[in-house]
Image 1 (tube, rainbow, N blue to C red):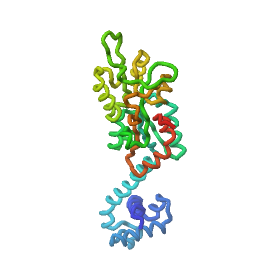
Image 2: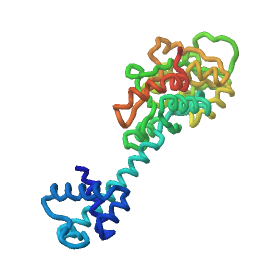
Image 3: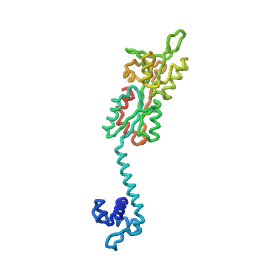
Image 4: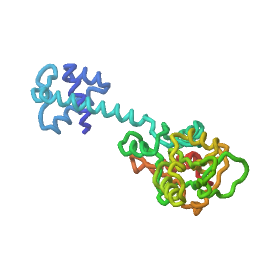
Length: 293
């Protein structure tokens, strides 16, 4: 028995005063409405309709149950509306900022989702906010930084400078300030790289080489880091990001063993859809992150 359908009949008979008019409001034949009422009576073990009268009337038991039946019908309707909204709601995906995160790159992610019959809404947020948003179910999915050995996508890092032509490795030791030097060169980390597995190896190297504390710092924005590079400093980035910024990328000599890298993975609020979403968006996300071919 369809309990909700039977309760709809009970409610309409109570409101319309007859089975015939109640069935008409529901758009079902009178015979169907009568069968649903009879099935509800069998389930509840009580008469709901006084069939002795010339006009069918609800019994006192049915009158007592009517408020609960109305509540059940209303809840079922609300559930249907919520399910419809959930089915049509775009899935929210959070990614990080960076030189490769352009409107076209974000559009490519949305287009790949559409090809996989996924409606996506992509937004840019910082690393800690992305993870929190998924954990708190504010967002459906996010690309988050993780150590390279746990990553789905791994991007080797180096430094870029405002120069042309190929460049050999640059050693951080060459930035050590010596007496009589006219200026101090600094290394800037993009905000996306303010995570332990990227930041801390560079800070340990800075201290081991005797550089000044301020010579390695996290930039306030991608634009601020790029402006500093145009003034003679260096920025930590991937080779793809350096090309996008029209800068010369060079491996960092002291960290050129391949272990210094960004790591990213996709996390979702529903683990069941993580693999499917990752597969559908793999190509545009690789480009967005600058993963080497």
